[in-house]
Length: 258
Image (cartoon, rainbow, N blue to C red; front, side):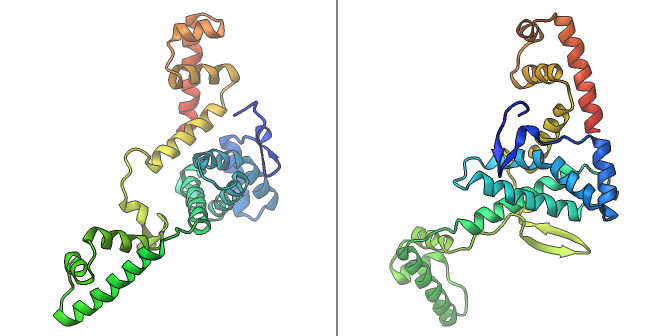
């Protein structure tokens, strides 16, 4: 996104600062000691991280400025709770918290509207279930409930699901000894796993530390799937130079990510 001016909440995102790994570590130590200036600098240095996550929700009908502000709230919470002794990068810890904060906002600000007929069917099913349970001393099946109120079992299931309150993936379901199990821990999403987003953002940050030509070569080679020859022709250098610059860039990225 470097070189492109995009204003969010009055902030020119192209001018946002980029902190080096050493700077982040030093600032985090100062923050834990109560240094407010270090905290402010660290927040500004991680606004790019918030922006990259907000772009994931670009299809949402919500205002991008609002999502950016909510993302910043999640990022600040991550700063307040981050444990530097754990030996993990801040972005690895912060990404799930920022995403969770945005998802909670979207859930709370966009309540699901259920039709009156669906609600009536759901409430009839609930009352019927309670009555049949008292009558037969056992929980009735969906088919038994459907037969009793004269609707299909498919309509019963649909109505009951419609009145359920949305639950955040970050809603805790179990906690013991400081270890908390969240709903998202029990949900599998092979296509869009959270760790894939963390890896994507980590790679993006690593690329930001390359110079312009190296970043362009990595983008063309691994994101546009161009050969070294095609890359050399487009940039105007030899294939040998592309090979050398590519190796240096990958070595720098590997060092940053390690």
